[in-house]
Length: 314
Picture (cartoon, rainbow, N blue to C red):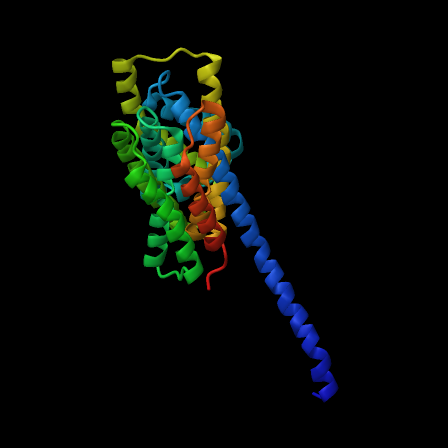
């Protein structure tokens, strides 16, 4: 190769490298956008949990949420699920665990928390779940990077400040425990998604886990109905259930699962820290919940942590 050839080939290699970097950035951007979409949508479900706490028993709220989600997903996923029935049976233990954590336990605990704590506090405490996602990913051998870890710690500090100093009533501790349980379940579910067999179709996975989760919830739903009675189907109860069933379940879970498949649970978890900010603003606007200096300070910590943690690992 001549000097001229070497000179002219250098810009070509630079352009090729830049092109590859741009192509690699596109999936990352899509993954972050999907994680943000799911996070914003789920913020509304915390508000509905609080709004329905006095009119719909928490377990019945969770059960009907998943029945609606199954009905929405079925037209798109039923045929794919049937075609993959042998594959799904082969991975039944994985599906049962994912359904138990992400469907049966997570939202049921969050709904129960809505009886004794505010939507804003629920969203703040749920922001602890990305810490567990990052721990799982690190145990799996992934390198998180200094900036991402720093961002995660800063955002988590906002949660710790709220939990230690934000209790304004004797009921807060009870709701606190329920939400912490929900955070552990959701963090474990998100980390588990990395082990989802690639050959299982995304919609088939959603349909299978929604169905299995609802079946596991059925016995406690029946018990709740017998002991507590049902609820009156009005516009004020059915509309929130349609929101959590269609948007927060079918749409948001699909977006979240896809985001994790693209960018991993740890980076998606950093985006999830935006949820308490969204919840606090929604609960303030829709439910009239107070927002004091403590909440504002926590929001600042969380936003700063997300800016740092969503960056590429260094």
